[in-house]
Length: 171
Image 1 (cartoon, rainbow, N blue to C red):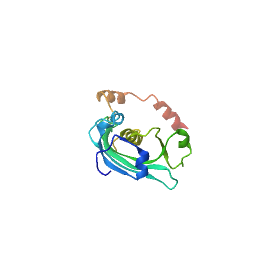
Image 2: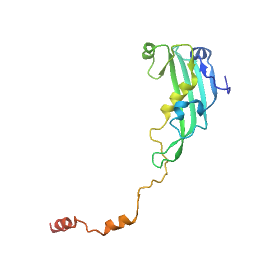
Image 3: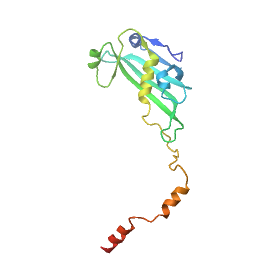
């Protein structure tokens, strides 16, 4: 499958046996859990997945999913554009027991039945790729709030520790 609309459900075992490659785009709106973390649901996710069998006869899924998303900057609370990319290096396992025996360089994808929802798998990997604290590299944060005149009055007061400075100078 190449550049066709992404299927909602797939059978990863059959795709791996055939060595199928899936490429395509999906709307961000189709990924509801990811959209709840964003400020805007507009945009697309580009997906490129290769299903295969490795030299150990393990069915694998390798590839990437990337998107440009908008999150809330934690400094200025304005939207910030973030490029996210999820890299897939998954091994398909039917149970938790099989997953424990997989090589450590694979992440286990447990598929008990025949079908797997492709969008939810891609969505989970994209959520893991989001930054913990999104922020602009160059945003200016307002650090003073309130009336400027109140800060001028505070500078007119004598410093209560000025006596300590004179004691230190005597030594």
